[in-house]
Structures are given as C-alpha cells and as structure tokens.
Amino acid sequence: MKILPKYTQFFFILIISFLALAFSFLFSSKDIFQSILLSFCLFFLFPLLFIRFILKKSLREFGFSSHISRYDIFWFFSFFLLASCVVFVHIFFQNQKEVLWATIFSQESFWLFFSLFFSYNRIIYFFYEFF
Figure 1 (cartoon, rainbow, N blue to C red):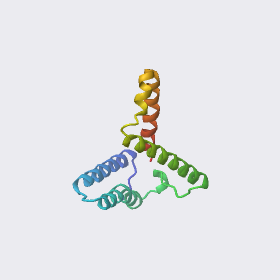
Figure 2: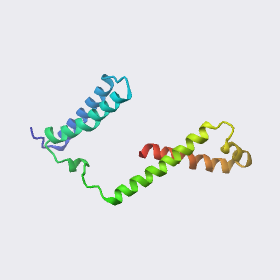
Figure 3: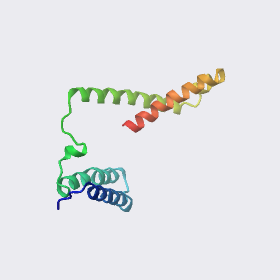
Figure 4: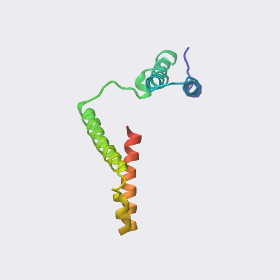
C-alpha cells in the first residue's frame, strides 16, 4: 500500500496517533513495570513499525538517526549531571521545613524574591521538560 499524496499520509498518521493514545487509555497498567512496557510499546515500537512497514518510509525522514557522536554523549551526561544536582538541591530544600531561604530573602526585597523565584523554578521546569 503506497500512499502518494501528503495530505492522505498526514491524516493516516493522525488517525494512527489518536489510536495509540486511545490504546494507552484503554489498557490499564497496575504497576510501574507495566506502565513503562505499555509506553514503550505504544509510543516507540508501534510508531516505529508503522513507519517502517505500513508507510514503507525511511526512519530518517521521521527524525530517527543512529549516529551518536562523543560530543552528543558528553553534553547529555553533563546536562544530566547538572539536572540531577538541581533536583537534589530542590528535594533537599523542599524537605527542610526550617530552612526557607526564599522567604528569608523575600523579607528583604520583593525584587530579590521575584528573581530567585523565577530563576529557581524555571531551571527546575526546564530540566523536567528536557529530560
């Protein structure tokens, strides 16, 4: 089955994407292993097989590449280490009720509190979305 028009291919991919989302809500998972396996099958393996065998396209056309350089590995592990440190600091300060460093600074100046709030929270949200 060869799909020539781009609009037909787009709607076919859209239908399959909604089908994968529907299956993720339809099949329930009881523990973390089942949920990881379900996510892997529905959101990685299913699209991979769909692109390869149904659309008969190259995986490179959809963003998959097998070339990973040392430069990429270095940046991944450096950002992962930085994100781990930020998350550790966040958890450490979150668990310590008596140490509220942001409230101590907020009593001094509103603008200092404002800058700390946005710099600290934006870093946490960035690493959460990135990884």
